[in-house]
Length: 401
Image 1 (cartoon, helix red, strand yellow):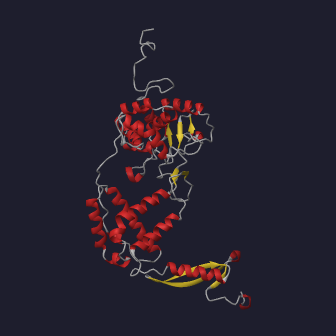
Image 2 (tube, rainbow, N blue to C red; image 1 turned 60 degrees about the vertical axis):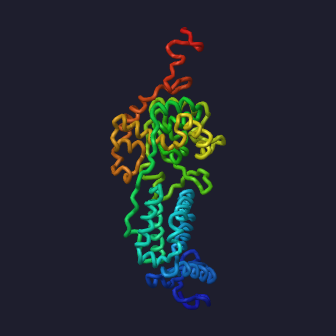
Image 3 (cartoon, rainbow, N blue to C red; image 1 turned 90 degrees about the vertical axis):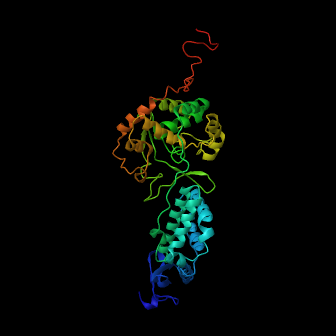
């Protein structure tokens, strides 16, 4: 390009790019030394504004920036990622606000990077006081990711969290699975769609909301007796359920193992057939829709349906997720090994420390058929609780026919 073709504002480091854009290469000073950066625009106004933004981004230094400022920018970046569940970001902010900012927030990154004992002593104190050590572990991991974010922007040169021991998990309260008698009582007390939901959760072991609520009728092959998990749900910041978008390089579900195919036992197939027919659901409809045909909302169903049922069976503090634990416990009682149970429930390799892909569909069907033998016929008019009130040939008044 000749000098005559350049505008008056052309400066060193600028060069034309495709689409009418101009790249402006320059150096910025960071705590780790000089770093080359590039600004893009179509005019000198755009280029100067972009360069100013980039220089401001890199103007932080460990001796000036506090941990609070680092956490603010880290959270802001996460908020801009539409593939992340906004409720998870809100939970992370809450943990920072409660466990990290009060004691460490006003300290500079430079002080924390050169004196790891400050962070170590803080988390040791939290582990001794906080009753839920899992929350402390989450805060530790998220702070480590925040420092990694700072390193990627050249705001600090090392991650002190990598040199510290992660707080140990002390289980104070474990989820308790339901007994088989309690499951039968839940099925007896519930009706219609809610009865099918409870039976579905117990007889498949799917994750309560992220996997179940996004299922459509077409995902259930009632002839083949399988259900395919391929659509997953996340919540927005306000708790509104939305289908999780497909993102390159990230698993669709909670883990890589979440996208799977589960065999359906015969009692559940009968329930699903009746549910789909009575609700007049089409192939593209959600399997368990709300009253408007959209995604069923977790909090609404818990408040209106689950809470009264759980209180009626003597488990007022139970959550629907414990039905998943119930499935795992029943399969274990039937003699299923951990590897087989993981193939059904879709656990990750990190959790189970096994490779589950070797468990084929037919092997899973044998496992689930054994689970189906525990349940009687759940068709219309049946009594899953084993009530013999009108059995053995008795009519409605108790007289023998």
